[in-house]
Length: 94
Image 1 (cartoon, helix red, strand yellow):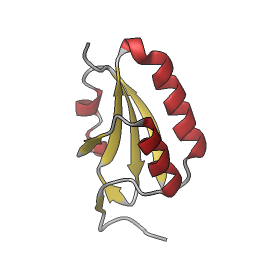
Image 2: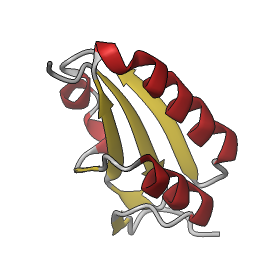
Image 3: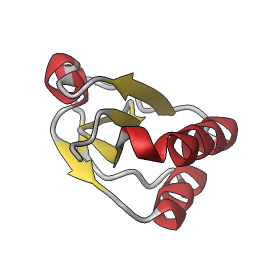
């Protein structure tokens, strides 16, 4: 089955984001990891959920995407603040 829901992790100081894709059958896992990541995130890390098969095309501000399937790696990224991406020259890095 094709993914139709996505957890997106974005560092506002970088271009790009990390995506954890799920299907309708994975909805409980999707809710759990999304809530966990939101609870442990802090600025400049943003965690959002996008719904719909075309969501990654619609919300292009999060492109380019790096896909991750390991939930532990996602948690480590958010805790450490080491989310992959290209430095954004227009970001205010306080």
